[in-house]
Amino acid sequence: MIQTQSGQFRPLLIVSRGDLYAIDIVQNAQSDAVWGVVWTSLDTAISISADGSIKQWLAASGQPHPANSSFPPQHTLGLVSLSVSPDAKRAIYNSLEGLTSLWDLTTGEIAAKYESYARTSDDAEPSWSVSINPQGETYASCGGSGNVFIRSAQPTNFGERLATLSSGRHKFGMHCSHSPDGRRIAMSSETGQIFLFDIESSSLITTYTSHAMSVRNLAWSPDSSLLLSASDDKRLVLHDVRSSPGGTVASFTGHSSWVLSADISPDGRLGLSGNSSSADKSIKVWDIGARTAVSTVQDTGEVWSVSWRPKPSAPGGIGAFVSGGEDGVVRWWRGAGGGGA
Image (cartoon, rainbow, N blue to C red; front, side, top):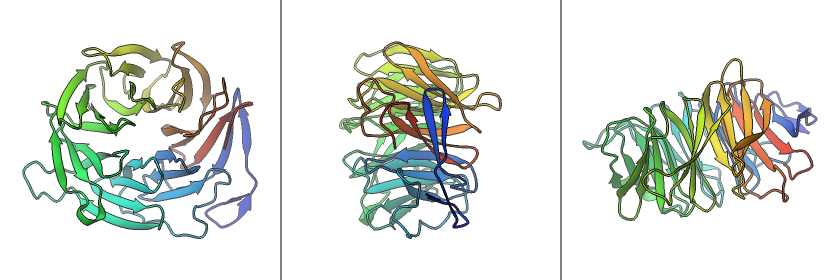
């Protein structure tokens, strides 16, 4: 059963859509668009919204987690970026104007905040996208300067700048993402470039020019060798970060408008993407090896965020993922005959 905002309970709604099943668990999860969602290693989903709220849900039931707990206070502006530690103990999220918050998921408390818009030095700037390092000691942020800032993720000095990774170009940083091994960080720009940095040396490794328009989202393969980019040019591009320069190994086409989100499955076999279009509103699953879409499903609104379940699927199966979008609904999906929520 599922508890809605009004406090009433209703059965799970399972809808067959081709070879995928939508388990429409959290109807009206948030009062505005869900701009980000992450399926965590503890089988919960965390979602952020244009309404300024962040919430956590049990994947098995769709009920708030922990039960009867309060979520962080709703912000006055929308939340635009979310990053969760691999152990699902901490989440870092960022608001539209650049307030970065550290949420302790074990206690439910906000452990620290950083006002990145409060200019205390010449190179300070409002953060747009944030990414927590898999080791958890630091996080990265990017924004208007086109640089990546490495900052402390410790509550005692949260947000303190520890290093600056310069792209050499003044291009707005749309998205930044750590590789799973914590050695690299990728940042995408409003004009289509993708910058790859080495964290230990604080140096720029290479620049990809695979896209003609803004790159909205980046996703790493579990072994940190592949990087999937989603762009306003309606394409996804797969890069092999082990080969430089260049690195482009595949281009995926089929969406009719901006591709807002992307992810790679835990076994590295499948890609996932969400689309922004009044006519399309689709989610696609891609076979990375075959370079083709293996499933397309129509959603009810623009799909702003997708995230695979961290647990690998059965051999040959599609597995399960979660999505969030324009209609404010958090949906869990599973492949027919495969592992699910």
